[in-house]
Length: 183
Image (tube, rainbow, N blue to C red; front, side):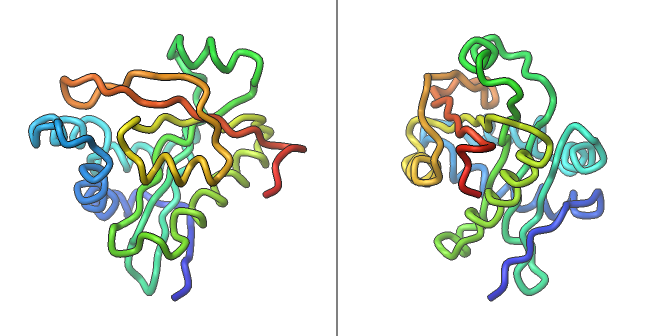
């Protein structure tokens, strides 16, 4: 089956939010309550938020389609980070952008959807002159950490991330782009 990655639109927002309700909880450690997950989904991954992301030049939002079904999404946040930890650790790596989201429907894991979305995001970043891609991933998310490690993202620090009212321990990972990039 062919994976088609395209720019997501505001019309995709409801489907992206529905996919997020399935994929985001899979990335969460087991100690998160359904209420915490629901609060995060509403704050960050709702249809309204996806519509905002899709219509803003500050973000590049991608949808992965297979035979007309939305099976994954990725998002790059091009806004300057206001996070002091990120600013400190990436000060010498400017310009940088955040790979903010990368999720795939569990029925489509392992067939290249995540790699295809990641490749599209990295090409877009490099095309905009970004030198460093950064992301955070929960320390307990073994699948995601293995994927990012294999994809060239080095773990450079620990970082905290708020889900609902619980602070998670994440890794801050980076990948240099440009002349060291093999994309």
